Length: 321
Image (cartoon, rainbow, N blue to C red):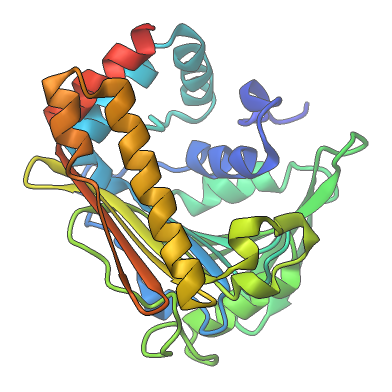
């Protein structure tokens, strides 16, 4: 009898989301408070071109994230799908993960690895993976790589390789070579992002929930080309909550001072448009006016803050329209 597929209820989702949901579905909480999981640059390769990190512990402590999650969990379709996963795995997807890091050394679609911080039952996880199509286990140094096929005999069929690095760390990627490279970084055999001087080694504000950065944008392939990308070198963004205020910070490096000035004009134009549309609402106006932008040579700094409760009220108003 074929083992239940924990991502079955999410069969129509984007493949990256499916991989993440499958990982989530296999984790088992241990009943103890989880430690915070901010971005650990020692776990990211020095030559990373892009990185995205989600600190789920920070999200659980954030007022706005909690309200968004409660509304999301109030959706009947979402509730049914989460319940289906919980029935198969005994896991509450809203509580099990500490943090997730995505990164890659190429600016290309469907590349990179996912590093997952969580408490999980390794035997249970591997039991499900071994039931996947074309499963195969190979060894790399002291690690076991588990490879299987996703969407077998369907459009978009591809392989996935995963490795349990330790009791609270899991690595997953489409390409076994990228998983091996990630293992070398974790083992200290290859250079890490920490102390590398990379544009991705920017400051991480306390309370950051989502962190994203890209370097070498000007060298991106045709799939990523746009007027903004073609005039850019790198960006670093952080979104989170601190002291009851939601914040967003963006550091953007342009190829020229002229381009940086144009980006500044775009941000100021966005702010002016938002004030025209929502300025009659005193609370909305106060939130919009907190958007600031400044330029230093080729670098554009954008910052915004707003009271979490006020931001949520505006979100609710928009959702009701």
